[in-house]
Figure 1 (spheres, rainbow, N blue to C red):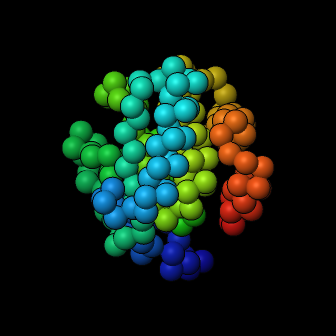
Figure 2 (tube, rainbow, N blue to C red):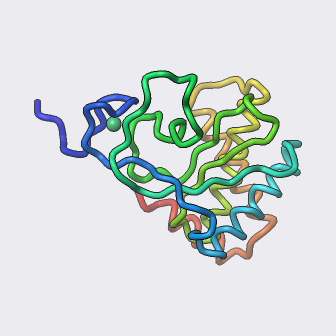
Length: 171
Ligand SMILES: [Zn+2]
């Protein structure tokens, strides 16, 4: 069977044709997205007892990305790209346990309220890593999603929350 042109062949993307993820400088991210992402991360950090300032990095689709063979030289951007390619990726919790400051990757093009939701969701994944969360991938996703909805409920008006739900249904 012939692979789809955009199919992801391996986690390191050596033979892949699909795009990769590149970093977007904070100065090129819309203020609404930055502000809401920060609000989500700060609120989540407070509720979860994480280090007070979570580092936010932003990404967008870019050229094909090949990972270096040696994980010891990986950067946060390598970590972001080290996964089967998912064109709908909205965020990823950075590697935890390496620095006291948690890191989140967020997609630069997220609408503000969605950025807030994703920041809460990914913060919960950081918390799961740090607290040795028991459960499989699906339980971890459900737990992060539950936390994100519970957190945005206290922060946003009902119509903004309905708009997030509509956006998250995009895949
Ligand atoms: Zn790939």
